[in-house]
Length: 352
Image (cartoon, one colour):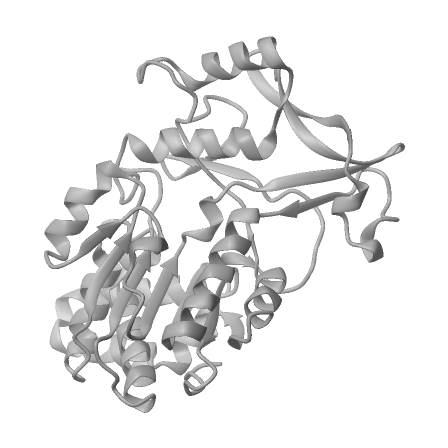
């Protein structure tokens, strides 16, 4: 982080930094902006800036809990077992998942990997037994791990490379009037581009996320060493593609990501096509990457919605609306993907 008074706007800090040292990378810009953004607030819910699937319906977390319990049971019910969630938000997903899993005998120790101090108290109120970690390094090194990351990878900073007439360059950020803008850097970056993609048309942008790659690599290693399974759920694509996917959301609306850094949630689509081979490179099982809507339907969300509606008929319309939001192709069902990994000796998972 850039050392500065907490109340100084990040835009002013960036302008001073760029004036003194030159353009900063887009990855630097996004990383600092999100660090400031998440450190200071609870961004979730109708009163915040965005709503995630666990906040839409309890069904989402419940089905994740049942999937994890099914995997653990078929793998032999090994103890001790650990539930690990990366970026657990308000703890809602964990609360729902663990409640459902406990009905089938899965009662793991609970570990939250979270950088936001603003969310810690909310998480611990929702899941009192949780232990808090800054990263995976302090999570227990023994016993299988059941890892969940919902809308975690999309907020990790991306690096963008652009093809210019002079070759590939990193996209850098500079001030432009009242906002910031991107320009091509001066340092040649051709060596960072896979050979098969180097001859792309000028103007082509390739986006990568080193943080997502490192996270999946580390998770895969844990699964190999300890046993277990992992679910990564996020919006993104499962085929290679070009172009910038950077966006910003504030108060449930898309805003300019280059205005008021640190005041909006900056995200980018997750490149699942790149992440699966990274996990496989460690010998980890990639169970598949499928659309969220298809996965939830195969886990029985429609039957679960009908059961909830029968118990609470006054809320039936809201229950079915939430289900449709999670699985509808025009809503979250197609854009959001679910990628599952497992230890080599663990079973295949339902829905893949």
